[in-house]
Amino acid sequence: MAFTLDKKHLAKYPFLKEAQGFVQTMDIPLDTLIRSELPTGARIREQGAQRLIAAMIPEKRPDNDTIAAPDEEIKSYAMARIIASCLNDRSIMDRLARYEAGRAGRFLEEEDDAVRRYVAESLGLEPETEHIPVPRYVELVSGLRDDRWRLVNRTVSRGRVDIGRQDLDVLVVERIRTVIRSQLPLQVPGGICMKLRESMDRISATYQQQMLEEFGEIDEGSFPPCMQALIAAITAGTNLPHTGRFALTAFLHTIGMETTQIVEVFTRAPDFDVGRTLYQVEHIAGRGGTEYTPPGCATMRTYGLCVNRNADCERVAHPLSYYKRRKKQEKPKPGSQAD
Ligand code: SF4
Image 1: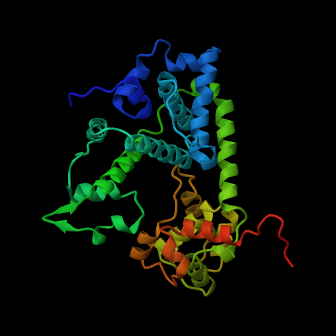
Image 2 (image 1 turned 90 degrees about the vertical axis):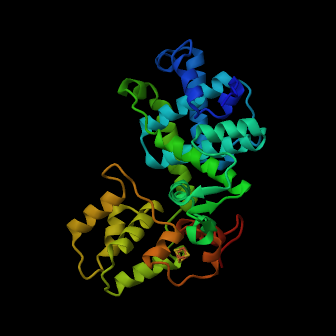
Image 3 (image 1 turned 60 degrees about the horizontal axis):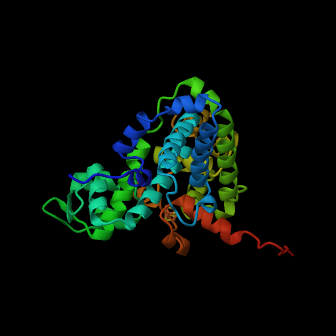
């Protein structure tokens, strides 16, 4: 790779090791900026917080991504990672990685081939490849939910999967996402996190508000058929297999149901044991440090849990997307009144 990126490139692709090298050799180190009361420190802190807010609220994203001050862009990316690490919330880190990858992907669309090649190679991808070995392919697409990425829907010959140019663009963005996510959380000293408390609280509150707006009040009528079937099975006194319990619990937790409400759903199961159920629900809800999300439709099908599909199922790849869509459709329009 004889090509060298300039500062503006590093600002567009701050996850590259060259950008991280820049942060480490800054005139004023980032931790000094955080600890000091310097106006530059406050500005970078705010820019980092704004990156996280944009990661959580699509409407807060700038219409046009431009790089006005490359140095500050690189620093604000580093700051956003520090704040996210202090929060140490899986969903917030996921959203940051997704947002940053999407942003980099949009910049890449405008780049010439040399830059695209450089970024792809830096991420361990072969930029001009038309075939990827199956194990590598499976690894690369493991976070992609669309059915078109499933191996059964691809052309595979001699242990390699055929890849088109547009596929490769998606895989590069996905790889950026996994690289950014794999680097989080960073090990941040407690003293630094204390200094970032105001930004952390603001981002936590923004995230919670966004979750409430996304999912709103629990509305069982909008549950996807698979989840309704699981609840019906419990109500009818059926013992659910582990995969069914897991999928339902993670779904109910993600849409905002309290632990006690979830346990209540399981009280109807014939083998109900309050202690065991409470333990399982709290574990899935993240008490052990990992918060689980429900499986996507492809995995639900593999488990044999995708049942009673309806027309809306054709438009989603995840039970949560189904729920969000249905809730939106059923939301009364402002000004309209129920009879
Ligand atoms: S398609 Fe998805 S949302 Fe619909 S029933 Fe199957 S798993 Fe549930």
